[in-house]
Length: 225
Picture 1: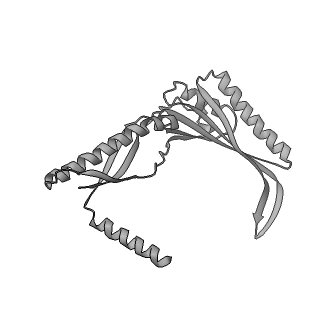
Picture 2: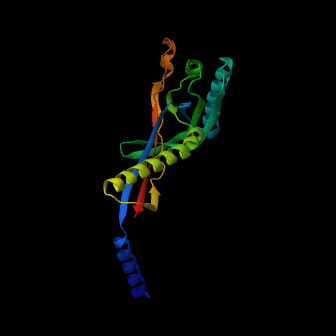
Picture 3: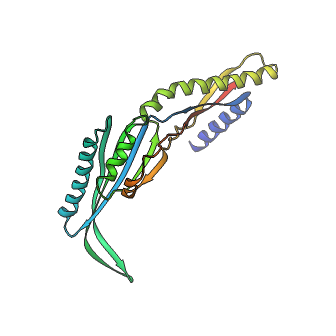
């Protein structure tokens, strides 16, 4: 059985070598403005009891929610995730001891990148207690999906144009598609534009702008003739 499979594979490889091929790469890209602004806040509190550490985190989260409402920020979502509680283990001079618990919570404020209230969100965070934050601009999943088919079509057309140019230059009368493959979608990473703490509360309004981000598609097409 193993010998038969080896012979079949060897025969298939020989056939592939005999097929005349034109191999080309097609590429397309768009530079688009991010449509989402995401504030990321990491909270951490220590206490001797789990309930006390959790209570402090919940209070900070509620303070932020109240501050956002009070500042009348429009069109946003406050998302809490990645909550965890661990033993607060302290290492010193090669020894360790347990000293209560540490509770952690991530908060995200998601809004439109063109929201005129971005500065109000910064102020609300700064007025909610001891919180540091990070602001990043990104292309939403919905926007990326809407571009997927357009980019794929353009990349395939680019590959076809390259293959036909090669064929015409070499006086090959006709070509047809033999095989198509493409790269796996690459993540579009957020662009970090601002990091801050509550010490920034006394500063004047900041200029917050987003940069264009690249979304692309790459395909590989084999033509035979």
